[in-house]
Image (cartoon, rainbow over all chains, first blue to last red; front, side, top):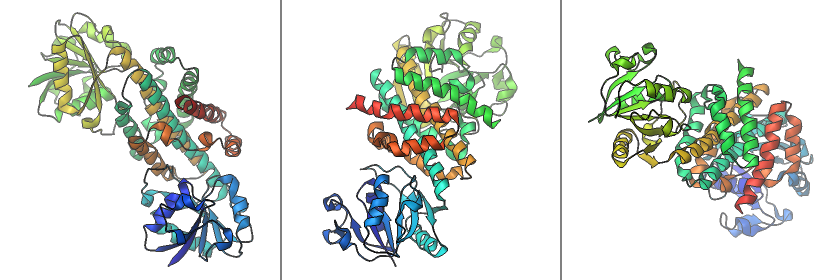
Length: 254
Length: 254
């Protein structure tokens, strides 16, 4: 039975705590939060600590804090020689204090408060310094997910950039669509089946095969009428840049 | 029993033909294609015509051709006083020849070849000149979809712009993610659960509530490292513009 400690109280930490609590193959011996109140809805008080001096013994320590705090938190841990991992897409494994064995346990997903996720399908990207630690991480990841990948720090950085495009920027496209609907008295719900189908197509088609719309058809009349319609300077700039970019991406693939 | 004729042989026409063929409440009496061969896999030869002179009698004629051809095709129809609709998001209803009764039957979806769609959930946006024609369109739409909306030409134009953002531009974000993965030896599959979850979140959360990532956290260190990582000028420009746009969209909502 693996013993784990989660350090942090943000979205990733909270989703991980719930995932480990829902599996019998891991004992979440403790969670650390600077403000223990933030985890009180997830764990009994005696399994939450607000002091690094009280951190319990475990096989794996998972630091799920903001990127900027990872190095400092790892240096504050009052022990050495144990396996300590972080969960960040953009922080190098070497940012962790070298007094402990180091690794990465990066769940590639967008976590929001009040939105449950199915961990079984979430890719977990693992990195570690040696094969024994990797085996431990793999065992831990396997208790909550069926999608485990070996990804080194350089790949992880590029993956994180790709994730910003397909998730954060995509969500911003939804925000612009929402804004246009609101301004024109149209319920945003009408766009939801289109949003779902656009994502569903990617399961079967490559993005190149799936591309539709005026930009890829080079339908200048529609493009001009859309630009004329848009009165928000920012939305107009996005429309212009992406409309130019779509055919370029296609030419590169041919 | 409603009798319909579909005019056109592109993606929208082919998906509509299949949808009508799959319901018993509509008789698709005929389809027109400039090149009848293009529909030969969907309908028996005696129900396809390549000549407007041979277009059969029906209750509703659905013109599903490219935007630029709608006006001309509608003027070539050798009859008058019948109900003729187009399926475009961006063409005004008045572009149809006024010799016939005019309307719009706009299915708000992204149609690709070789990708089946579930018409039942596709919003169909209807517009017509009078209530009797509207009732006919509503009856026709109801045979294939549970999501029917009354949308006038001005609303439809804004909806089409919103659809370009949430679908065409979103798919382009997937294309950039695909490109980054390919260049860095990472399987694109690893991004697919994130893509699905980003779309799934929108069923429950508003785009504002769902926004995550370095731009909304104002995480300048990550943003700078991502810009340093991106060597494609075009991708760098998109990253910069969208990263500036995300917090602006939020400020407007607060």
